[in-house]
Image (tube, rainbow, N blue to C red):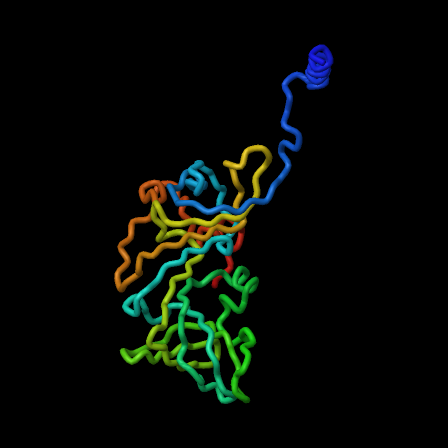
Length: 253
């Protein structure tokens, strides 16, 4: 038995070529993971994965690959900001119920915006179908420029060629949805989806990066971005303009 085992081992060693290479090396593998933002370096995001492993992530190709989520207060609102929300309206365009949330976002280049028009192009779009709505009432998604608001929660938005007036609900939430990481800080929660080459899953090429924080954005935002000095010197923190230059998308928004 021992002689047979030794013979098998010897044969296995003979079959293994010198400098054995992991089978499947350099094969692209999809990956999605969560972690904490540690910093930025030479166009790479540095992330501590939830299992404690340090991961370097190559940034997405354009601004659509980034999302920064943060809650905001009414005091953060300014005229001219781009917003989107869903609500129910009658056939005359009058809202039937208060709106329970508004997302604030930044303008993108026309080319990028057209890839997701119901997210970035001003207008009124069919929303998700909701059951049990009264006759003549439908759900719509509104994208447009903030024109004004008051202390009672009344909000006016210019959605393309059409003005839309809504009432915010008592518990309505405002959320910042930026397509860059300008306000990100070390320790913020990160979700990454992308790919890596076997066997090294600590070097990831990102398709999407979502950073979220519970820091409430108020009237004056003075948050320090990650590695501010590095960003100023190398401009590694993407802005929409930077993303457009890097991807050849220099159209005017």
